[in-house]
Length: 129
Image (cartoon, rainbow, N blue to C red; front, top):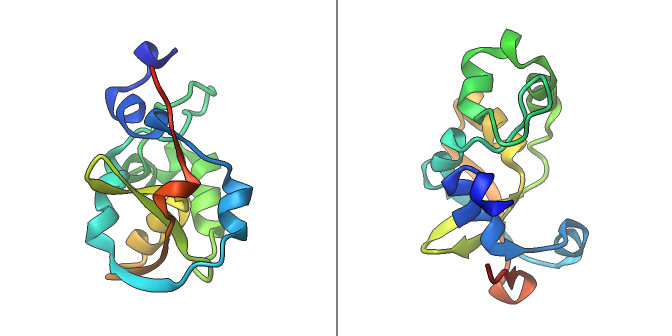
């Protein structure tokens, strides 16, 4: 399966495993982070296209052409910035474990910073391929 994934998805998201509900339960401090530190996610095809084909659409494509991606645009529009993004360090960069729709919304609103919680490495498990 990993060979059919976009390289960036395989390299980052399929290199670790996590349980999002376990992550939510962690009591972690919230801090402000420059949005630019996470902006690379805007160009990663993390979402399905309208036909349901996974890993086909980037957040930037949704923001630039909302009428072509109404399902994801609705999710971006309804995302609440009251909740921080959960991030972890993976392969030298901060990777969002939960909150890409919130990142896209913050970007669309022109926010310069976002709230994040840094998830410890112990909360994610490396995947051997």
